[in-house]
Image 1 (tube, rainbow, N blue to C red):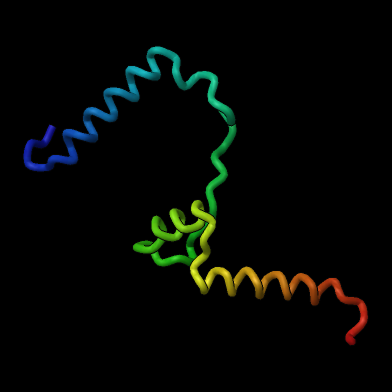
Image 2 (image 1 turned 60 degrees about the vertical axis):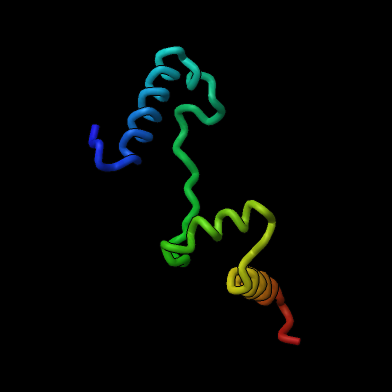
Length: 86
């Protein structure tokens, strides 16, 4: 353990607790066990903003550019479904 970095102590404790929980079988019956994680693609969001965007989304808020992109995608879908040009 590196004494110069306080995060290394926290990481060590967290890993130890995870190992103990695994040994007790606390992760054995979790929903989705054995299936791949469904990771969302946030490649369009700058890396330094991803956590903030995720927090805002979980709170039901969308940054303006994402709200506009969502509206554009909705309109494109509507246009693709139109059979008549008018």
